View (cartoon, one colour):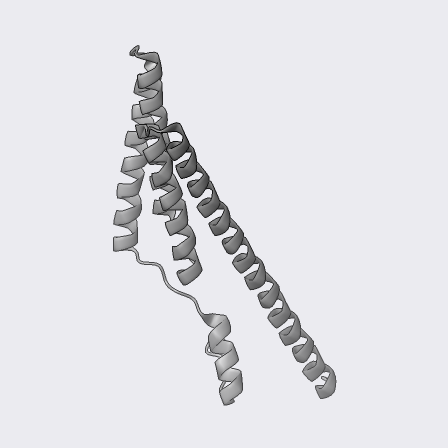
Length: 164
C-alpha cells in the first residue's frame, strides 16, 4: 500500500535535487567556458604582443595563433550548442603537429625519421576527420532535450513524453 503524501514528497525531493544538480552542472560549464575563453584570448594577445616586440613573425607564431583561433571557435561552438565538436580537437592536433614539423625542419635542417613519424600522424588525423565527417553525415546525432520537455510538460500539466 502506497502512502500518497510520501510518494508526492519523494517526487518533490527528486525534482528539487534534479533541478539543483542541473543548475550546478550548467553553472560549472559556463564558468569553465568563460575561463577557457578568457585564457585563450589572453594567450593569443600575449603571443601577438611578443611578436610585435620581437619585430618579426615566424610561421610557428602564425600557426600558434591559428591554434588559439581554433580553441576559441571550439569554446564558441560549445557555448552555443552544448556539444564539443570533435573535429575541432583534431584540427588543433593537426595544426600543432604541423607547427612541430615546421619547427623541427627549420631548426634541424636534417631529414630524419621524426619527419616521417609526424607526417604519418598528420595523415592519420586527416583520415580520422574523414571518418568522423562520414559517420556524422551517415549517422546524425539525435539531440536530446528531455529535461526541457519534462519542465514544459510539467508546467502545462501533460505527461512527460519519456514516461510510459
